[in-house]
Length: 216
Image 1: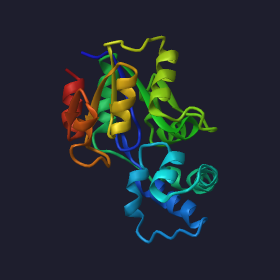
Image 2: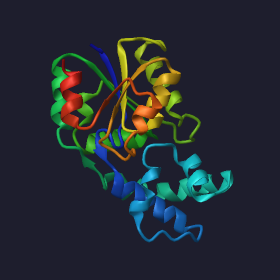
Image 3: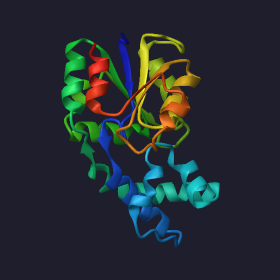
Image 4: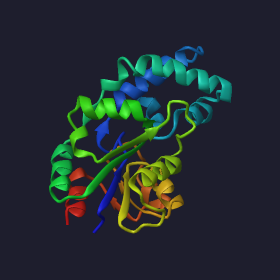
């Protein structure tokens, strides 16, 4: 069984929908783009934001960078805690630590925000390492996040004792680029079939199913 577990944050351990979508809505409004229903902005949850602004709303690179700054104005003060821990996550993390697994976060969210969220929800205690994106976005792609996690852990790509766990194709693809196995879980915002199509090594639909597998 896998001794080293890298967890994505958004959609995998917590439900950040309200905070992220309302902050994206705020950023788009800065450019005169009105989105009445923030629920339509869930594709922004998971992947890095600059390419998402470019892909989903046609912003230029320069505009997308500005949008990120406006997004952070709201997210860093309000949206950060418009978030909920998914049911069963604290119990799963506690059990993993009792089994002496190395548990880390590998998130595309800025590392400063990841730590603040985990601390706010009293989850930071369960993690041996926390890795996120850099605030300057030079480290934001999931592959880069995972590589940074491996560096801090003193591990190498292709290590079969390591499993990347996430709810979107970006998590699976990042793991594949680092030659790691991946576990996809439909607790977030991926459409049905996305994780299988991306090539996840394992796929589950609930926290309970995932926990039972990881705790074997």
